[in-house]
Length: 132
Image (tube, rainbow, N blue to C red; front, side, top):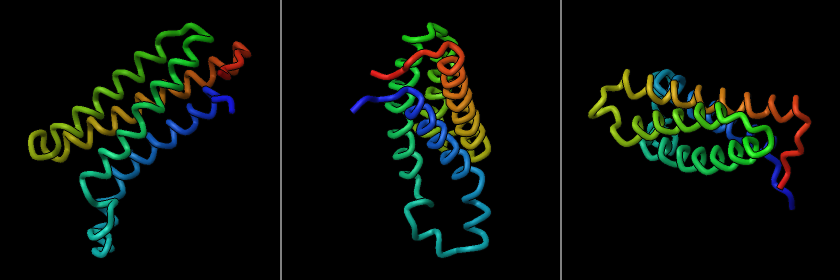
């Protein structure tokens, strides 16, 4: 089975968006639906699980794409986004405060998504066959 950078890019963007939605929507949902506090989505470990999915997905997709189109900016966006998300996850709201933690998470997810969208577009423009 061939791995497609395009498919992995789309998966990574989806994971980044899931993280952003979790950061933005969960507090409001918890206020209206207190039973959500008992679910996995309300725990801090959910961020770590998402991060563990985002990191390898992003590394694989951005590396495969960059090998084809040669634009290292996609790697810079992705790497910086991963660093921000890791900082938010490791330091957490206890050390950073809730606003800063969410801000870092959202900025990181946005940078990762931008890197993957740019990677996807570069592969489409250069007609690279990002399959390996």
